[in-house]
Length: 110
Image (cartoon, rainbow, N blue to C red):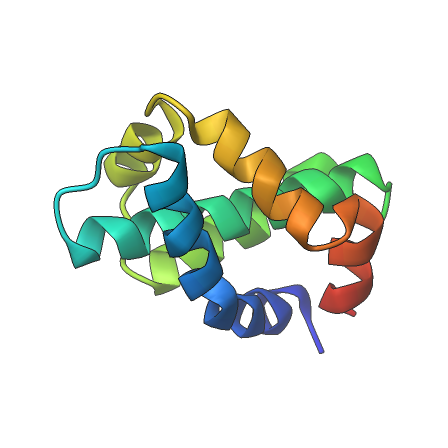
């Protein structure tokens, strides 16, 4: 299974992230923006953990995250909007922790 396939599979857990979005008080306008927040969080968390655990070089991990988001119709502007929202860093840390930390998240990607 390649990295993009694993990310697509992980996108199925987006509902958990959407629930976390509400719990952290991040303002989302509609279901589409909640979906975008979930997809960005998953892609960025996967890239961060692949880099931190030295399973992938930063450029390759970022490229996979970018390809994944593009395949889901998430623009660079939408990604930047999500990442700059108050509470986003807490949301990503919470998501990573819920996956068993970076080690657990990377194990699940394999």
